[in-house]
Length: 340
Image 1 (tube, rainbow, N blue to C red):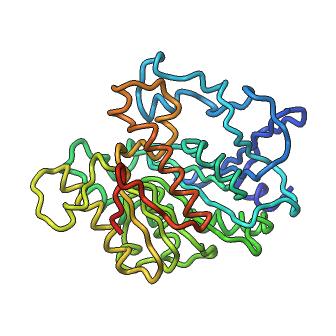
Image 2: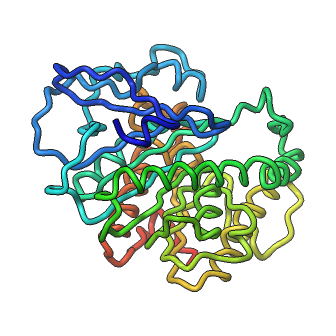
Image 3: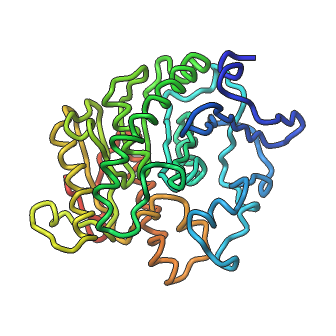
């Protein structure tokens, strides 16, 4: 058994006869980091309908309470993403993507994008973490006016600890799965709080450096904001609670102030970065549009208001894959806006 599994990680029960490999590893003894899985492009044919998208549909209900009739039968959804428990040098892609979800999310919450990355010939490592605000000194804000002190508390008390845990875990993953990193292009893709964690990890110049960083509507933190990143960046922002005009004008509304602060963080980090950066605002989107939710839920006008437009979610994935492929990013000017 590997050093990794002997120390901090306990393998989930393995079913040798399973037609579909779905291997996740649980991280033990960490305050925030909970687990990870690895997926690589496979030529194996899997029987449609047997892949369980989520282990427990209650995870979605916890994140976004919904009546049952709005939930699709996720156990029948086969998107072609299968975590594995063994790797071979042959057949591995020349790019490895490390994904971090948002604070209220989970490792699976962008599996449609992850499946596209596999087809794009990327290896994918997904890390799962959890911040329990019911037991933290940091209190989740009950209204918009409490957001600024909340972010400062996160920046001071939570983010540094997660970054150190991430560094320790990545050291062991790099040690145990060298074939995923040797002579590979490394990319970090992250949503929401995960983007702030990833940016601070890269800013600290830990064991693993990256070639590219993709921020999916994430809130950034110091020191990455003022230090910048020396890696190529793509920042994608929501439309619902962010306007680039707020960057240059005074705002009085508390919600607009949150959007102004969010944009200022990105703008400051881009200006401090010694690398090529692109920044787009996605029309018809809100914070949840950057996950699988628009595609997983029974769609109607009510749902559109709460999770954004399905078409917007598709455009987000297209921008990400184009960026990874090295294509010139061309914004759909009728729907999206290039800020930088």
